[in-house]
Image (tube, rainbow, N blue to C red; front, side):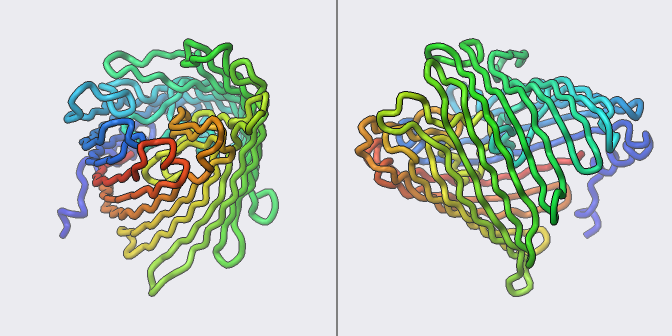
Length: 417
């Protein structure tokens, strides 16, 4: 039916961009999600049944070829939460993005970005804006870069914005990540390389609560690219020095993954598998060996329930996606987790402690998670639903209230740019 194919709002925005030679245009997103969570924080918090809503309205303007200004407001709410919802669920209309970019439309040469922006570096394992969260992280940032046909060299200073649900989110550089992140495309046989050195600093103003301050130095590299017969690979290795509080920091993390695109009964099928690990502090260790995950976008990295972060954890994960049609996809995800060190803690997605066995007698088996979810896209509309169940391991059974968290959600989203 023709009326189902037409989107007058999106068409109007497209005509506006065409009339201004792509110098001016709007962006828009409206998302609603109903979710039920049982066994929240492994039984330490009450179960949740929430209706989450998020609206974003943005505009970008490029009056000349070398200058772009972009702004986006975001209003995120949990209207039936009861008591005031936490700042991960609620932030009344605020500035989500507001930045200027110089020489951004050039394919080569120098460029710069200053202001507030949602960011993703690499595969967002260290720096990212988790879009699944109702209040997605954004950063106050200053970035300068130089591009060639295949390479990008960048220096950056980024600071995660502290969300104040009923106040304007003002810049606060008490927590900051600075350094360099460089990408080299198609270096050899399609392989691309990321190389970076990052300093993560945090004081009491930025949220540090222990003695001293936090100051970790992260050095890493990532290699990724295609392989024959529709295979692809991704490998990342990270080392860490510096200090966490009064202790020296000596930590590491690594990731290895692969995927293959094929077909099943005429339908597109994608297999992917990965193993990743982040170090913990071992028994009797006098320095800190617990990996500092910086400011990542962890959604889906450790299952759909978002129970864990990349600290003292080893994870085996698989994901199968079957495209029943071009618009409708069925996904099945499996994760298996265990601790790197039995005497270090189990950490949640934000990096805070869930549980600890100080003597290391609770074992290392954290548990397994099985998720299934579907998505359907129609033009600017996206619909989806999913369910996840966590099967506790020995460590969770002995150090928490011995329950299996469960997650169910249904969502719809409308967006254009």
